[in-house]
Amino acid sequence: MTKIMIVDDNRDIAQTLKTIMEMENHKTEVAYNGEEFLGKVDAVKPDLVLLDVMMPGLKTKDILTRLKEKGLGDLKIMLVSVVRFSDEEKHILKSEFNIKDYVTKPFDVTDLVNRVRNTLR
Amino acid sequence: MKEGFEIVAVNYWKSVNNEIKRILLDFWNTFLLIHDSMDFADIVGFLNKMPNPGKIMYISLTKSNDSMKPHLKDLKSKIFIIDCVSSMIFEKKASQDCQFEPTPASLNDMMELIEKYIQIIKPDLIVIDSFSQFIDYSSISMHRGKESHEFLEQLKNKYARTPYRFLLLYDNVLSKDLVNLPFTSVDVILKYELLTRRKDKMDRF
Image (cartoon, rainbow over all chains, first blue to last red; front, side, top):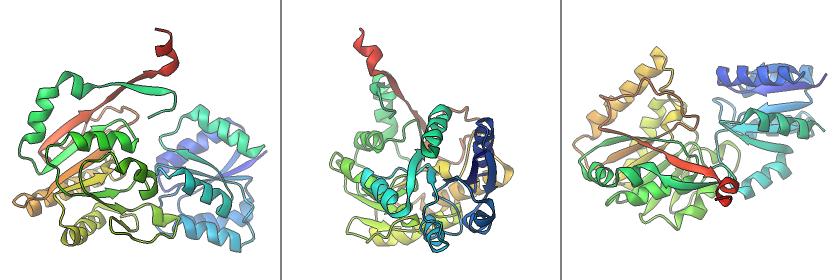
């Protein structure tokens, strides 16, 4: 069974993502901020992380940098966020931080599920 | 706007053209614009409809400066962007028309940001994109409701007798039923809705 970590400070959205992923037969673990995520990620060893960009506390950039420092730079990450970035910025995210895909909120559930399936392949 | 869709009409423009002109010309300090598009081009379209918006200070919590840049050429007014999202991931350098700031964590932080940049930029219109990052008017909590009310009251008390005007964007992309709108705390509330249809369906006509 694949393990997916959901990192989002919005508890409603985190719970929604958890339910969707569990309906897809994935095991899930939720963290509500970057610190909590970094504290859990070694033990959980997720196959994929759904990471919100806009959270209080640690900046996304710092979370991704600290993952690299932990030797987890190859971890598959999908950003799930309300923020619209340019295509060039998305390209930088892919090349620098191994971001596999980018889903904008509010998301379409079918689209999200398909993207997760593709990323996990 | 979703891929595969195209704008058929903007309902306020088609049906209440004269009314909207009058509303925008009226004296107001705080304007809550409820819209259903995350596309910056649609926001530019609305700003261009405003009579004499003057210099715009655009505080963005949902779009990076880079993603907005291609549409700025269509904007008729002068704009200064305060990008509160890019610094979460990228190292960016400020320019003459853009400054990068951390995301305000609360409406108190937002008020501090407004006060700081009003002094520097001296704008005529302050746009907050988007107020829905702080509050959900479809299911408001007591705490959030109080925070929102206090913020809007503060705007009113501090800026009512000044030339500054505030346009608060509220995206309601999911078309939720907004049962707790702040009718008494802002001067105008307007719903802006894009009517779209699938391009492939249109091709059949």
